[in-house]
Image (cartoon, rainbow, N blue to C red; front, side):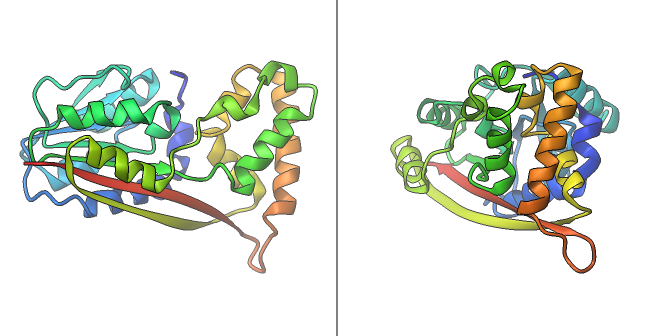
Length: 259
């Protein structure tokens, strides 16, 4: 999916960048010469990496033209390349491969993650963060609305929009089997105060709703979004101050290749 919209994504830039900062804070590297930011998007995570490792050769990798254009405008001193991260190979072994909220879109982690580990230099780190929210009301209702409306045939199987990530113990086994001496795993649930159900829709239009909306006509898209927002109003009741709280679980993983 290459039609990512940087402006829509960055409407919630602070909330989207916080998990990247939390992930980076746990990376156990004092210095780094080469850093890869896989799925760099508009460069918000790449900027954090440049602050942490100012002397490193940092490369942002993404397949979305609009995201890369935004990253290049905001960070002209850094290098960004267009590539499918499923096939990406670093020019030289990096000290850090960083992947913030991107690998959940890709299947077959049992093959993908060991391939990324093999690209690291000895002692290098793979650090990734993935939304773990497919069972949250925001995403469960997305699938239910998709399957029950005049747009259902156009969307197809709503469960196929995103492959469920693996269980935590499966990632631990997978990465230790791939030659990692240390595997650090944790899950954090963020609670984002938002200005009503419409704000949840706006948030997810930049990410999770994209595969649902992409095949729809303008009429069906409007109808889908209206039905989805109505369903969200019941699942996310308005609080006394007029806000709603969006619970957003995320899985974090840092694996260090054996030196």
